[in-house]
Image (cartoon, rainbow, N blue to C red):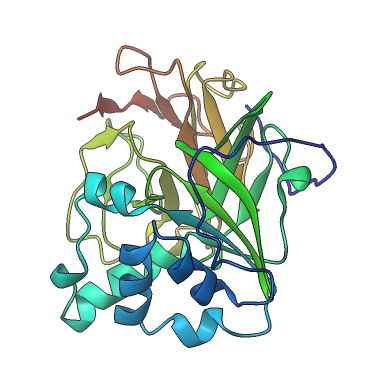
Length: 276
């Protein structure tokens, strides 16, 4: 398991494979530069929908991972589909997951580092030579300098982690119940490994500390699983603590994801895993 803070020391060169329009300049703010690239019209339209243009015109500095128009098309995200307040709230969460507070250039990125997005969810970076990814998205153009930060172009939309709420826990199997809402009304019975997942305690449960891994009870997870946040294999989460799980390359639905109480070895079971 790699459990990392933001450590910004490695040097990196990233080749530019998406053309940037000459109208994008270092004297312009991030929304203006995004509009000038020629490949971010959907992003700009969504920022307008979510009323975030003024925010990203602020002093910052901000780092924005900017999906291309094609990336939004591939994700099925259309500005016309966000109209109600609930829909706008979902859109806002998605967009803010693409923004990091501070000026993070390509030379600041290192393999396995994580950074908190403005929506308070973690982003995970992988660096392999000139190949750089944030979550599962490849950085195709780096370091588009703006007056209030920097833009990195990515080829996929970054979707925030799926929230999973974990019950108090009992000695009877399956030991814990999982829900997709903080009221505990909608059971969650499967884990989609194509998405990251953020685990919370339901009602800030204080007993039967909860954790998980892919190497069995209280064992450190393999490199195919990254867990960022609170807790550990021997001291799970209680109360308001959370952790986020990223399924890395090589992890498949044939692998085993075990969840357990770190205080009682008899309270251990496995998730049902799926993928699209």
